Length: 465
Image (cartoon, rainbow, N blue to C red):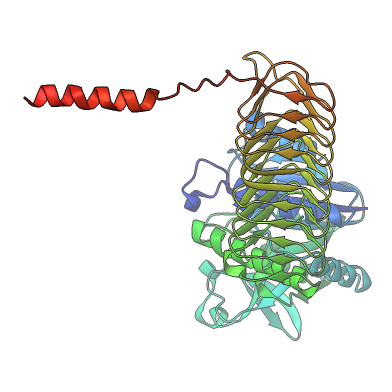
């Protein structure tokens, strides 16, 4: 049996926020999401979380229910030991339990796997993840004697000698479940904070001859917690660079990491170039040999190979190979752009399919439409899809040519290889191979402009007398 318990009882007063600390975003998702993903990635039998009195089931309950996690409540913030005692029902059975924290999002899977392996191979009753840092201020110190860990002293309770110790406690532990359950009752709150420290179990277990082991984290940044807005920014920066370093190691060029934001779920193919001021979030996949940016926002989208995109905004769209998007395009949810399409400047596409080799080069709106192959959408064309009550569909068949400044009033169908005259308002279907024109008839009045100007000059002359 292997269980994971996440402690997240604190609201985070130093964040100065109405939002609980663990629901503040790191890049594109709440920091708790990184911890939950790590927990489930370890393939445990059960995962539970301890929440505090900040918890509002109506607002946050759905998140935890969707994760299939057990929830335990800590009514008062009386320390980590007290938090675990609030989840005693979770400490049943044999096996091992891992203790994580909802505000430590940088922890790596490989680190915990290494810790878990050492815990099992060494047959430890308790294993502590530790780190060596230059400035240990604020952290609990790992106190050793005769090569063994004897205690962990919190910074507030440490004497001068103990404060000089640079090996710190991360707060991440593994226990044999029966050992933790049996010994929690020995915790006392006889300290400056008046709290029940889980760290006190080290001394308790040592005195009772339990076996305590340690694993040192290779990168101390992994155990960084978030308590303030500044720490939130620092952790996000570290997460961003971690993600981008991995992408660059796998053949992606990121021209300016300082101005680039890429989420942890994003996948990018080899030899793709990401230019400055680009934001790529959510469940996004980008193929090989693309150029993305500058100034692009992409979220929950799939891009094929050889896509070129600049100064554009895309959400929940699919873009196939060799497509050009932008500059200044907006692609909205439900859009599917097929191969070798061009969507140009100031073009918006929503819930539409644009088929192979078609073009909408500038100043157009295509909404709730199907556009066939080899279609040209002239400048200023719009699909009038909303009648005040519902959205209606426009269908433009292969090879059609839509003249500039045309309005296609849906529902309407433009037939194959037909032509729409510029400036038309089309309210009825146009058959294949036809010319559709819907505009007022032009009238030329010969000489009218000349006589009008002469009349105006005469009027001014009279007024000036």
